[in-house]
Length: 140
Image (cartoon, rainbow, N blue to C red; front, side, top):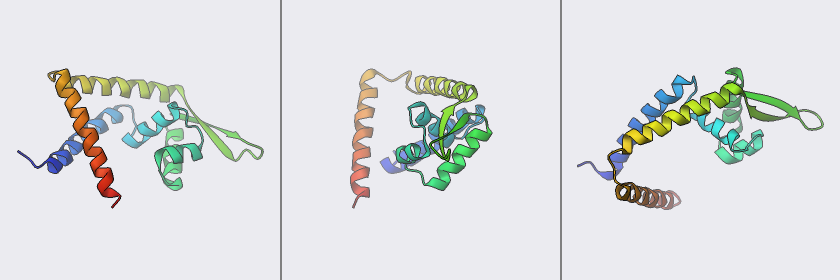
């Protein structure tokens, strides 16, 4: 049996590979999909998105520009000098979110279809505990 942290690393690689395949079908990266989810959740300005995602301004600007270029987002100038931008999802962006969310739900079903409710709950408990332990150690 693998050491827990090695197993976690291997799982993360496999999970990322599957997620990448899912998002690629909608011509998005995983990061772009996550950014669209933030916009869908109501974070509309670059400042709000930066706070929510903890991305630096240049990385966020580049990702937003890519999403506008891919016609997944629309930007609207606002404010007195029209320099602040408000982002909203286009129809293509909404369609991509639905496609990815559907594929993601299907993935979850396929992964856990043979797991009992008790096993699923235990996994959630242990993952939450691991997350808290890693957060505690990373603060030291």
